[in-house]
Structures are given as C-alpha cells and as structure tokens.
Image (cartoon, rainbow, N blue to C red; front, side, top):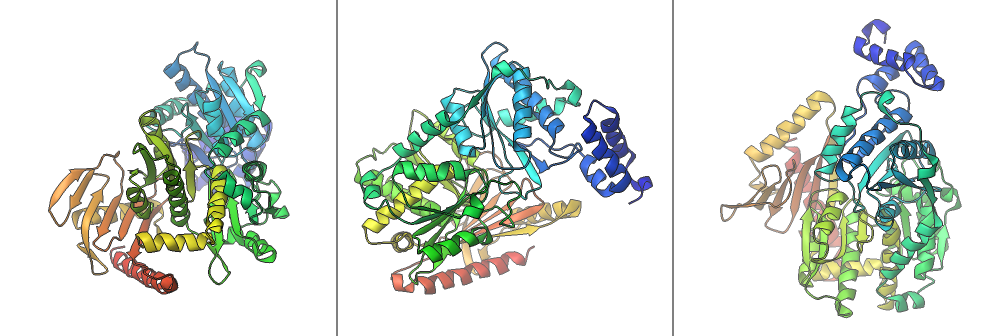
Length: 582
C-alpha cells in the first residue's frame, strides 16, 4: 500500500496520536507504522474501537481501533460519568476490578483503577488474576455499583477486552448498556480522561474474597455424604493457562474432592497460551493434553476451563471406556437433572422454583423441568439475560440453576454470570451421585435420553464477510420471514417464533401470540417430531449461525449409537434443506 492510497482521515487521526499528549513509546510505534506498515496503520485507525453492550474487545496495539491504555481510559471515563449521573456525586461509589491471564492484564486493570479513583470512586482491585465469576461475586459481596474484568474470554492471544458489570453482579442490560455506550461516545479524546489515580481510594483485595466465594460454592452441595464416599474420584483438570488454576482445584478440595490431576504445562499462567491453538474448551483440540493425561491415569472425568474461568468443557467415559467430549447442551442437561432430582428427594421443591435457559439451548431442559413441576424460562442468547431474570424474580421465586449451550452454567444466585468454578464442583458431585448408583456420567446421560427423548444438537456458522456479506445475511433473514419453511427435511413445521417481530405463530391452528422477550433478529422453526432449528445472525462477527436440534426415541441403551447415528443423519438432512437457501 502506498501513502497516497491511504484515506486522508486515517492519516489525520494517526497525526493526532503523533502530536497529542501520548507517551513516547506509543508515538514511536505510530511512526513505525507510517513508515513500514500502512496496512496495519489503516486497520489501527480506520475506526474507533466500539464500546458494545458488554464493553470493549479487540486486538491490542496503538490506534483508535485497538485495545490500549487510551481506549481503556476513555471507556472508563465514560463509565465513571454514567455512575455519577445515575447514583449521584456523593453516594460513596464503589467498583471492583479483576483480570485474567491476558497479556497487558495488569496494565489495563491499573489504568481502569486509576481513572475510576481519579473520579472519586472507591476501587477494590484484585491482587492477581481471578475468574470472571469471582468478580461478579465481589460486586455483590462488597456492595459495589459496578465491576470491570479485563478479559477477552477465549479469543486469540492478540486480543484483550473490558467487560462491565452492574450493581447486581450481572453484565450490563438495558437501559444501562445503551446509556453507558452513549456516555463513552461523548469522550472524544484522552485529554478528557482523568488518568491521575488517587491511591488512597484503591484497596487491594484477594484471599478474603476467595474464602467467601468458595464458602458459598461449598454451600451449594446437595450430597456431602456422597462426596465423602467418593472423594477420590480421579478428576483431570486444566485451566488452559488461565485463571481457573487459582480457584478450581481449591474449590474442589474445599467441597471434598481430593484427587485432582493437573497438567503442569497448562497450569502455567500465560497470555500466549503456548500449548493450545485456541484456549476455548468448546474446541476438542484444546483438551487434547487433558484427555491424554486422563487415559494415562485412568481418570474418571476431564474438565477444562477457559482463560477467564466462566465456561467449562467436560469429557466422560463411554461404554467402550473411551473418553468422549460432552457438548454444552449435554452438560447442562446432566446438571439440571441432578439438581432437580436432589431438590425433590430432599423435599426442597415447593412449587416456587425456576430454571433458566437461553432460546438456543436444548429443549430437553424444558422436558426435565416440567416433569419435576419446576418453572423454566427462556431468555435471549447471552448469560446477562439469565442474570437479569434472576434479579427480576428475586424475592418472588427461587433460582435453582441455568445454562446455555455455549458451555456456561450457574447454580445458585450469589454469582450473576456463568461460573465454571462452581460448575466444576457440581459436575464432580453429579459424578459422585452417579457412581453411588453404579453409573458413570455417560450412563446418566443415557438414562435421561431414555426417559425424556434423545436430543442431538449441532451448530453451523456461515461466514459472510464485508458489506456484501452483511447484505446477504439480511436477505436470508428476510426470506425466512417472508417465505418461511413449511417443512424441513420433509418434517412439518408446526410453530415459528420470530423474535424480531415478537410473534409466535402456531402453523397448525393459524393463531399468533406475543413473545415476552426483547426484540432480537432471531427466528426459530419447531417441527412436529420435536426438533428445532434456530437461525441467528451474530451480533459481533460477520456470520450467521444455525442451531440444529433433532429429537428421537431411545428405548434401549444398547441402541444408543444407532439412534445417535440416525439423529446425526436427520441433522444432515436439516443442513441440506437449509443450504438450499444459503
């Protein structure tokens, strides 16, 4: 690329960073890009890094479109301004800050603490990396008005992020999400940011919060006697170089499990994630080392958490004594079944409890909840909506648990986000319960399928880049609405939910009813055999996602593999039918 081909507006923005009140290291990097890498310069300055409904996430580096001390500072100033507007100047504003293992983690956490304290806000800053759910817990435990965690979840190592929480410990929801975005957008320059932190307003926190958090996790246990009996279950655990190394083994030990097997190379905290291509427990390759360790040690269960410790992947043994990876729906199913069974056996179900799942999560959770007489609610995709519902029903109904297909689960309400630390403990407890019944977690899953129906899921993402890709995705969604499927793979569509119009249509009866959820560009097709297909454009990436859920019958556990294969074939039929319109 030649300088003459670069948009003058981009060169002007880069010029401001060369001449303005920026540190010399930053200026030197901008000069280097101007002289040596114009493509990178354009990407770094062609837009401002967007503060979305959850905060910031982007590649680290210099420029307006990058995660750096200036973009983080401007976001924090906008947050501080909104806090003062909402709660008042003299209300003793408080904030908690945590960070995971990402590169520049302490740098961005310290900048956030400095700006908040410079604005007169008392800050509680963790002394070292902690899981995201512990930040959610700390917000409530310390009575904070907000919380910030520096994390890019499972994104590649080049990324970092800035996630904001509200005073209930949940991620931002309406109206605070859009209001904070508005305040952040008003900050046009780092010159408007109060960077001069007030040390007297910054308090370091650490083990005291750990102890309180683990105490709450321990209180979730429904079968301490079984844990005592099966305390030596062999659990292989990997934090994938992230925050889980600090809390998951400690929590398992506190609950009563004392045989956690580590992968030393992956216990190493590193934002470069040196042993994995991606630190994402949804991807089988990320758990390869853990699975190898489990085979060598003849372990009972494998668990791996993502860098910020809010999601967990699980592997269990099948009937051939081979480890297989559970998908997010299967883990959520096993946990829900265990929780409700134990609550019923212990007489804890009063008719005033509830379960929550996202709309793209398996309908099997609904079948289980209904069979126990427990209310179950659907919310839009994103755990923040589960937290929002918990808050709405606080003092009215008792939250038992919730989950989403993307490996996020929550038991109890002292955390208001998905929590891999407590989930690891509850999964281990479920394994102990199964063992007491002479079963494995795989056996337990088959038992559920035989009782409620065999549900099989698959997610396919279709990438459509650029403006033309966005237009193509919009045309696809328009077609699904104007000319909806009457049948998919020759199975009749009986119900259609359109979350953009807020209407649910009963195709058989020809009636419509309102969907009691916020507007969202999602459409779902329910088939007469119990299968479900959801179409959802991504809100953060140039892709459209298709969630396929097929349902079948499993009458004999010996037929598991045969029925599984038939459901996979059914899903492939759904995929072919959908592909005709892509």
